[in-house]
Length: 150
Ligand code: RB5
Image 1 (cartoon, helix red, strand yellow):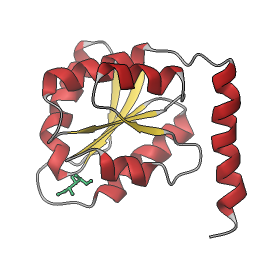
Image 2 (cartoon, protein in one colour; image 1 turned 120 degrees about the vertical axis):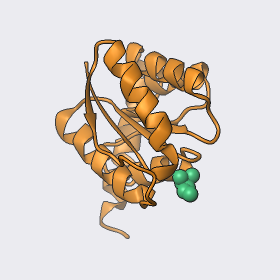
Image 3 (tube, protein in one colour; image 1 turned 60 degrees about the vertical axis):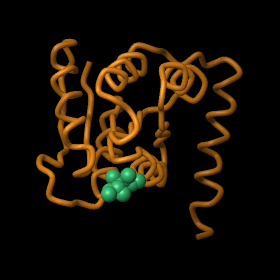
């Protein structure tokens, strides 16, 4: 599977570990940076990853200190459903119920072993559609409804 990943400086070490994990799992990885711990602004990397996820229709992984900033920023891009996941259950339901296309992880919150398991669960779990389809469509309808108003 092709996967997009990106982090700010606070997430760069965890990102590096996740990239190695993804390769070991046989995935193709597009790393959008950052590549060292010089401070960068998390909305910039969130935008980069979100646009790649959108145009290629493949899953994305975003890492910052808490996962909060990157998830808020990525969710501003229409078509993006970024879920901040702290455990395997939220990773599973983010896919099954919300059809999330980006998983956000906090490097200051989640250790590398759990982060790998979250990523694996996220990538291995399918959207259940059914009743959840209508709800996800309503999320997208909200994007259209408020697109012109702000
Ligand atoms: C950077 O210090 C930090 O604010 C960022 O990584 C993230 O936690 C923001 O939500």
